[in-house]
Image 1: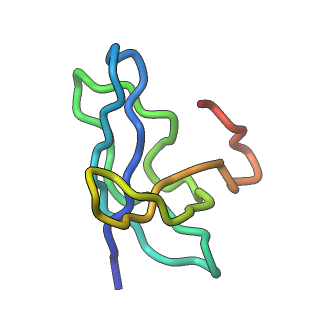
Image 2: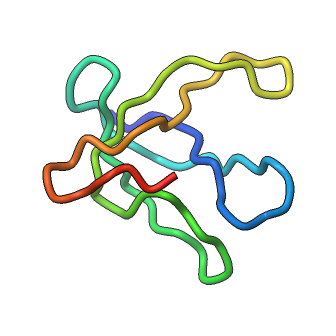
Image 3: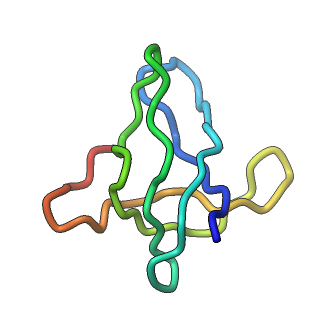
Length: 77
């Protein structure tokens, strides 16, 4: 069942977090289901697996992408 994780956008000048749909793969690892909008630069790609951690964003606990776990991917943040 898909869940929402947050991806930090690149090249925004300030911290901007995009909520994206992802599916759990293992504990703390999720596969990104969404793809970036045309004008957004994401540090992860659609279908990439990312390690997530809980973090407070605007006073709410959220799952945020922290590092790629896809064998062909590499950390791009």
